[in-house]
Length: 317
Figure 1 (cartoon, rainbow, N blue to C red):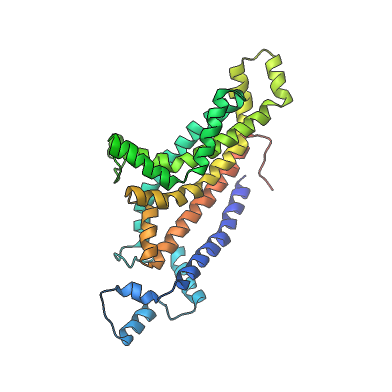
Figure 2: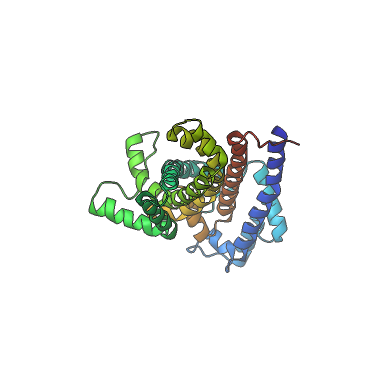
């Protein structure tokens, strides 16, 4: 098992290098002089001063050399300083990633604890009203964009009913009640699509498991339907659901970019949007690196969860 984990961790390194290099090259390909973004629109400098700034930030070097310099510092934990506020990128991303992680976990848990039971109920009561309702809701959850859902949630629960706040952020560890109230709407808008996907996958997997011979054997032994479904069927049906759940990590980060901007949350997605418009290269590269590490780690945890759910799966030499 540990050899497999080490091997997977080593495989992450070239993936991270490729992703960050592509981002670096694409940011340099954006029209305009990156030096102008560094000095700001209000400052007027002569060509000599501009050349000094270009040399200081290694912008006069080839792309591969620039990337190599950044990568060498990143390996040591130095992601550079933001050109927007001159603060270390690692500190900025660390504080903002905690904000994104908080409401991302709430969205994850919402998708898990709503999607799986709804999918199981839809499979158990196949062809009945419960199944039809769950199917319509899941299709709608996949089809509706999360930004439109967020806007509608703001209008309904924030503006019309006044039940929940629509802007800002409160740390859930400082004030759990207010923190959850501020997270409710963005977590709902972010988690609906994931919930719908998990619901559909749970239904499909449960229907396949319920048709197996060992399900009929369990019922023939006199086991109650509740035991058959929640103990014998659920564990086997969770394997494909875990796959879908693990893949939602990337969707959470992608949705956070829109949702955080919409709800005024000072998270990593909002920070990345500001950095892209300001052409803050080091922030964009550092943010993409953190997102890539998170997605790859989630995929590794997903693979390890297979062995826990199904003892027949072994990771070895």
